[in-house]
Length: 310
Image (tube, rainbow, N blue to C red; front, side, top):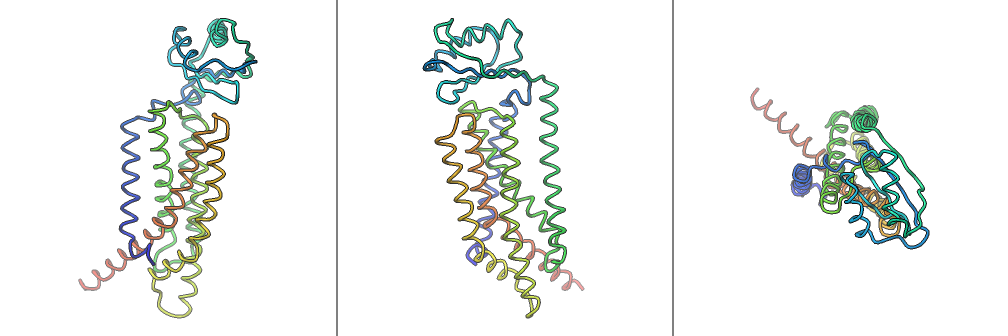
């Protein structure tokens, strides 16, 4: 019952974190760090035969090409990934020549992709559409799954609360990602969208497990007498939080291993998923269930006010 008794504190913490995340998005403007997956451009990946040149030396040489903004990222042991605007054949050849430091370092081009602006805009639209459709699907699924639980809270309100917690779970990692993009030049690419969708799936499963426990306990209480909703929610949390924390912790440990020991290309993807798992577990225990109790208390007060007016 500790969480339920202090629900206002935990809800306030979540609201404060979301507000800070939204402020960071406005200040650092994540839309200015969109990768070529969304804006269009060229991606070149090269592997060096021997040790790769220092990143600072290559960056200095690349700036002299006049190709605009170029992002150089280490990959693997001896590879580099270069993201730039769309390149002509001549510019592409000049880029490879510069990466080899005028032929001093032998390299092999392992990958070259060119994405047009129209494809980037289409990906942006589809990514946003996917997030909206998944959120609507979650509301409908939970409303159906909890259709027999109408007291003291109707089933569709469970769905709304889950979506609110999902916004919390996504907003905070995105806020963190925005700060990283500003200070470390991390770009928003297709992996970013995959991370957001993965967070949605992982977070909602954890919340539904707790809500399902609440539903079962409500059914049991309905058979024996009057339902004490806050007490039922608190009891359900006590039965579920160890399982939720342990499950999330095992996933977080794997993601941290990927962040520290995995390839550079998936480093920030793993970091964003780690933040999503952490705050998703937090919201399942300290936000979703307290919100249920808060909504029930508001409904009870409204009913009392209506009775007093009569």
